Length: 228
Image (cartoon, rainbow, N blue to C red; front, top):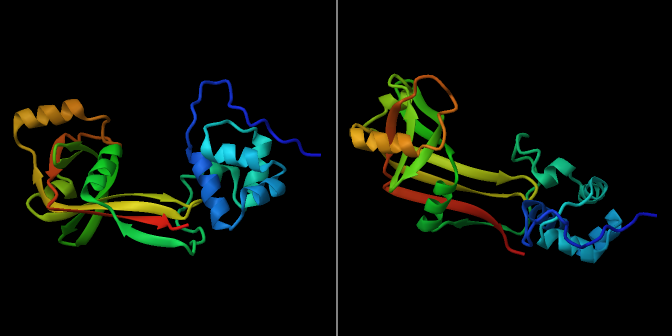
């Protein structure tokens, strides 16, 4: 007979509040049209524990996670986010979804919370999309590259910059797109400030000390939401 885990918080200092695990469990359960009672019966837990797991921080035993994941038709890695490096976008779409625009303030908040994006530039050979480590400096999106790189040679042209987030378990996500003219940073004081505030070195390595910046003239975003 399966035992139901305790619904009391762990004694490891976590605080109450929905976590990514709880959010994924709730989204997948809702997407399958299951109640908490039904998920509890399928996984050998009870509705109170499922509710606690969805709404509070906790560390359920691996056996419990395995049973819940199996009942939801996903893997433990899917629920915990450990499968983030897997090919994305192959989950089944939910019927209750809608694509809604993001306010500009929300777009700027999301830009400030991430550090890697994609810059799209035009080249003589055609368009190119390049991943870059970036930072937000006032209204600007700034990044470092090599002097001879494609991004550096695109100075003075209109470019696009994009970031996004995809969650296969919830079949949701969002994207932010910034469009504007790309320019080289030439002011020595501005260069020193950007270098001092950069949170990391460019992942591509090498002598990437040439700062570029984009001041968006158009900033838009979209989010997939579930209406139920």
